Image 1 (tube, rainbow, N blue to C red):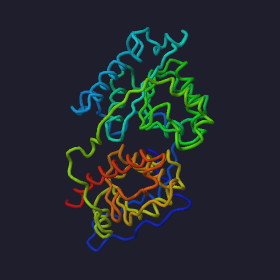
Image 2: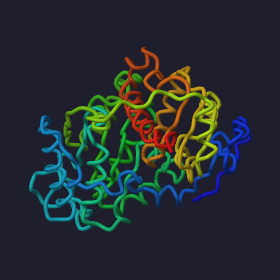
Image 3: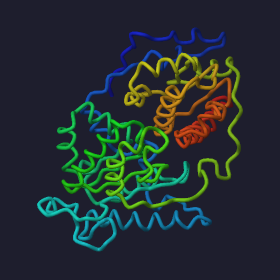
Image 4: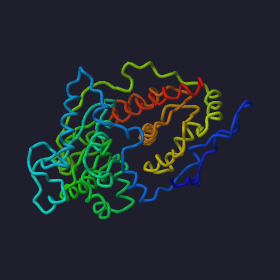
Length: 375
């Protein structure tokens, strides 16, 4: 792991252990602005720790939502097709994704699957299960979020990214979003090149392929690129309620600052930050580095949690929440509850599904943090 480097502009961490404090002072995320080398970006394109053991057999479909069981069946066949002699998109055709197919003309139909559904229906679990079930060496499969994929292009350059990923059998893209026109054109071009090279595609999102970018920028100006992306995928709808809270008790209410500070000082590997200072720090660190910023952190402790002030800040917080969730890092907080982080306007806008996902994941992590207080 890359050592963390202090930011040139950083907030002071909350000082001093309480009188009964045990152990060294906790770390502060606001003191971390890690550099992430390109080779690490490539090496880490595997399912995150939370989903390392994800398999189709461990996905528990909701009996009331037949689309969930159907998704497992379709994806199982898709995985087998990548390593077998049929088209993984499901047409029973010749396999287009092996190395021998690269000299053949590409098929006209979609060459990927696109898992669409609300937050918490297990799309990432299914995507990771597909990665594990695909009969290819790990080095020939790649798994990453949309943010991580665009950052890889930024680190390696477009042509080098194409060369690096073209030898893969499968590319899995989690949290597929098109938040600006530049990313629309970039990802459309990249995926087109990878499909031509014989790479199978799989993605998850809360938005159907033909609706990508809707309500976020002038989608009509980029309609050709958006339609081009849609043509690569067979949409697979997954219905259901948020499994993270199905049948579980409510998350604990926020604690007070003194409790959070005390727990941070007695928990090895915990971080302790003032929430407004952390939000400010996130604006100084590229979102692609948020995962590395959490290296070695066993629990995130936050004081003075407040509603986020604007949409740019809110979107950065969403990325941090995703990285913490991927790494199974509990979050202990004082201040406002997580369902009050985003304004009513934000929860009705074009990014609403991202915000609801963040609330869902942070609530689950808050539940995971409760034993730290009780211990």
